[in-house]
Length: 290
Image (tube, rainbow, N blue to C red; front, side):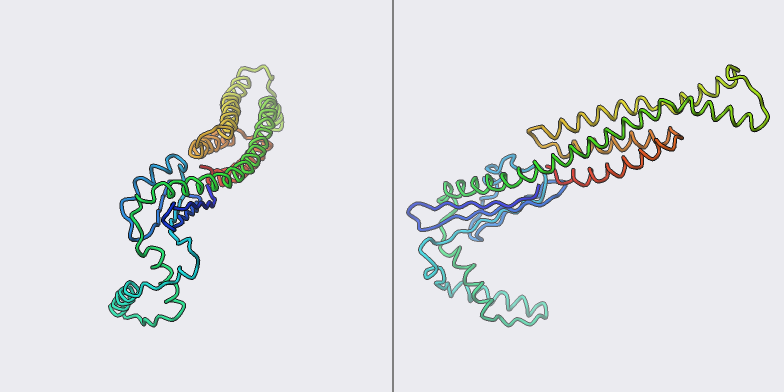
């Protein structure tokens, strides 16, 4: 979701250049903030429509600037009336708040620059074509950056899912001998207590069958394999799947939890702990996916 894009376009015959910058950072929901010359109004809805479905999640800051194309000598022409009004308003506010207000040369320069950019600007509708052109260029720029990051992230996640699947296969293999291991341990324990029972004794068989039923993790292992396949499918999808992968991580965690609680095999427990640690790192990465 993170990225930066910039686009520019000139208004033909107006001596003005439209600059659009887009910053995006990670966030679970979509938060779009638009900053434009203060003299403009009514541009939010069209801009939101032009952006369309470019963003599904993240905090997106879009800044629009209008500059003269005639050079810096013209850029610093002072709008003294606007500067005086702004300084007066700021001084009144500072007085109300009990703050010391002593504008210096740096403050005056920044104020002059900010006021000259919007001084005498035409309505945004008169600059609609270059504004839309600059916006589309900025969107293409940020998409290129996000695509490169996404490719690297997908590669990392695929490797981690493969590690999880290896742990799943190890758990499945360990579970295959757990019933026989429990039977042998039970008979040895009975012998230590001087209780000689035939392995075919009905009571022993019932106990072993109960253990086998209680510790059966075949369903969990099968669902884990299905979840991994689905996760990999999301990584290759040409749509926003971040929320779906986030939910799938919760389901994977649930299956590993159930697997750990069902089994008393030390190897399975070790594999489950390792898998849950790895899954947590995957969940952290998924938070960066739109």
